Length: 166
Image 1: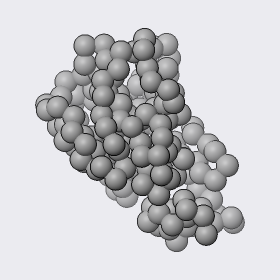
Image 2 (image 1 turned 90 degrees about the vertical axis):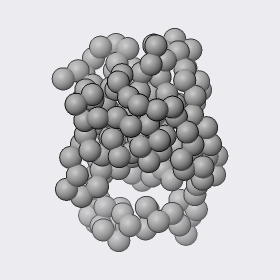
Image 3 (image 1 turned 180 degrees about the horizontal axis):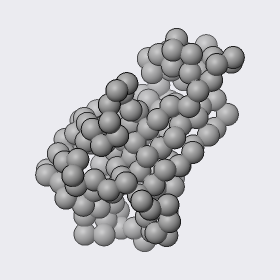
Image 4 (image 1 turned 135 degrees about the vertical axis):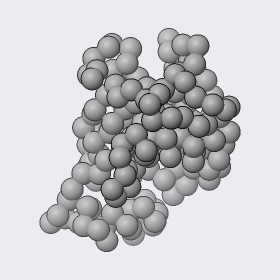
C-alpha cells in the first residue's frame, strides 16, 4: 500500500467505488479565490503526502482554500465551510461568484473543480489545520509563488484571463 492510499480520504473513495479499477468516478471539489487589494490568499500544503491530504497530489504546493463537496451539500455551502475550516475566515454564500469549472485529471484521480471568487469576507487567515496547511499568505496576482496546486492555478488563470466566467 502506498502512502497516499493510507490517508482516510483515499480509503473512503476506494470503499465507495470511486477509485476501484472497474468503477472509477470523478469527485467534485471547490476552490475559493479570496481576493483582497489585488492579492490572493494561498496556503502552503504540507510536504508529506499523508499530511497534505490531497488525492490530486498537491503536497508541497501553494493552494487556495477549498476541498471536496459533501453528499447533498450545495456548492456555495461547501465553499463557505471549507474556507472557515481551513482559514477561520467567514464568507457568505451571497458574496461568492462562480468563475471557473475545470476538469482536473491525473493518473489515479479525477475531479471537477468549481472555482469561486470572494472579495467580501470577515476575519484574518489563521492556520486551522496545521497537519495539512503550514501557513497562509497573501500574494500579488503578478507575483505568485511556485509551485501552485494545479486546480488553484487554473482558477487564478481563468480569473486573470477573464475566461470561463459565468
